[in-house]
Length: 256
Ligand code: BTN
Image (cartoon, rainbow, N blue to C red; front, side, top):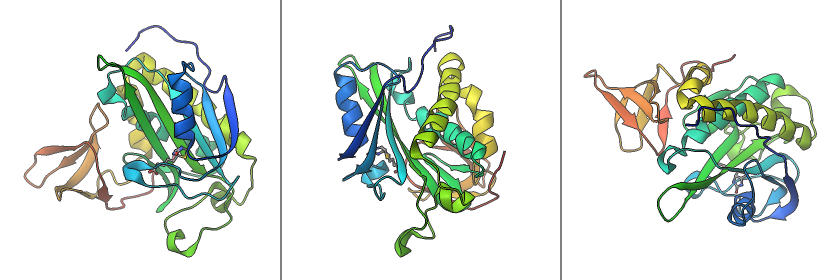
């Protein structure tokens, strides 16, 4: 990590697009052409928005904040997933200011209660020598949906559903960028450890039973410094879960 403060403004350049396949693709193209850190791409609609594990986003035009940010953090590529943690705290901060108490579901989801309101997708690109070239951080936040179709009604929510208020998506973009600027600066200057208390304060399921995709079970006790989820087994061992789905029993929806 660099020690000195770095002045940057996330969103110094914002490419506001209409319908695209995915803002991740547009931002990756700009990054490959040399776009500087903080360049943002937004779209009103994505025909094939990307999600973790190939999931595609679901969003009617204009109702969600669909954005991708070019980041060039001074970290090894293996630590790029930490940016989910940084972004999750920032989005939860922004939602809190808007009156929706949000919690974080490891590793990439921001929730209100049991319903997902935001998904995060950090995609890293490395150079030939293996160093990190850039990360495209994707954020998909449900803003103005009044309801969701039956198959996902119990799984998804929006800021409008939670607060009863419709808001311009641009206003939410500014709020998320401001919160992210603050958290990202701290991450670059002091490392992810400086964000762990804020993450834990907002995390769902810490202290409850958790089952990893490979069947390992334990009590979720916290996060490792690289962002891995730590589970304590019945025999008292600590296991690290670095990727994949984890089913976590609800303990409480953390507020702040
Ligand atoms: C997930 O929940 O699995 C992550 C979803 C990330 C969706 C956002 S929407 C903006 C950006 N563009 C994409 O194609 N995906 C991310």
